[in-house]
Image (cartoon, rainbow, N blue to C red):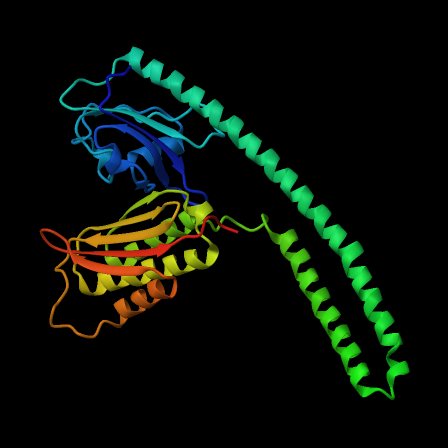
Length: 337
């Protein structure tokens, strides 16, 4: 309705000041979908201020100096939702070689953004209510485990210990009873640790894979000398188990460090993608490529080992015209425990 070339919807990454483009439609939509927008971009500044900003030309506007998305080619309108609690940012716009959006179009887009904000806030309240019910249910389970299961196991162990004296002349039977008592003690310890885990789960800070990817890529800018472009697609926080997520972060850290030391690159693109069956990490740079004279590559060997231990693969291919593309792929189970 706005006759825009591209429209994107970005949401914040929990625990950071960055945004990620969750949805995009129009020209270059595949290029920007999943792209992380650092807090230096115009979109993040709009989200932080809560004010609508228009620009006549994305190419020449100094406020878009650090932008990596949307692709600059015309007039643009980053539009935040009006409701302060909703974490969204709509960006209709980018009309090549055309004048800026008319006031009527801006008002229409503002209305759409506010409706989207309201819908997302309702969904957020619903998730909060479901989370509260889940926590209440976990508390009930923890109480039942403590008051019923542990007490019964403890009483059973005391009963067995009380009859040990009756088997003093039968060492084999006495030994078997002692083993059962020891097993009951171990079971009680396991249940207590489970109760503790039930109480802790959901109270820790956000440590989702998306947040960790943004943080790790941000830290790498210190050794790279510039910010790497990050794109995240798929249900990374839902489908990827914690042990695989730990391996992915380790691979990303080692690969970016290796790139900083040897590639002499000026741009690095990181893509993390989760599908129903696989987790894929792709890192490409525009550096000098792989040196064929180097035979010792301990860093790459570590990445390969991390992949094979999870049943995955590591590939390293030249990038045209210069540079290297590293792709680390591992299979995923049907869901995350």
